[in-house]
Length: 112
Length: 112
Image (cartoon, rainbow over all chains, first blue to last red; front, side, top):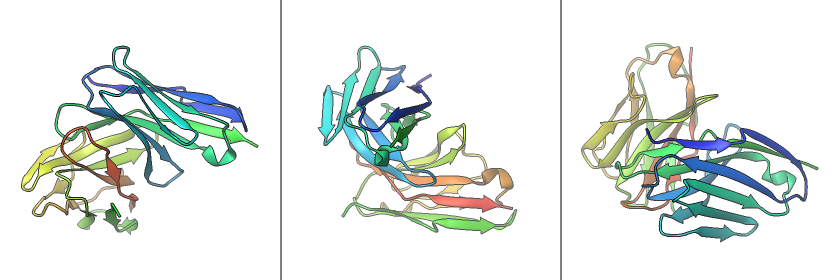
């Protein structure tokens, strides 16, 4: 069964720290891996998309890596700010049509 | 601007009263799908469509119907809503292949 797992479920760090969020998947046959941000009760905002042939993508203070052989992706957030507080979800579509499998998310809290 | 538009954003209804949540996209994407998000259960796929007139069940299709008569629209129909369908619903689209998924703003449905 294809699964996407995110650990930890929750993380609290002081402002200014660099941090890493983890995502693991059981099947390496993913089309891509996408990281989303979700604020409480709100929609999903796409942060970064890494194609299966790529190893990393960067956007501002965010850097996402992908290692298909080990079934892992990480989201690195540099110089964290209170505005980064949200739930971060990773998601991967597999070869089976349009199904995207989501991790359960990491709830991030940045303390001022 | 790329958009996935869901309506309504919020809906409170009574058990058994048929309702439709609309989803429309302006990106000419082939794939469209519906997800529900519940605390502790994450995002689960309800139905998906690979193209016009092609739909299939996701992980939790019971109590829902969909149709794809036009490429841009993918309505979610609840023929006889029940309280266990109270949830946050998202419509998602993406193009064929390993491309970025786009999500609507979400519809918060409460069935009393």
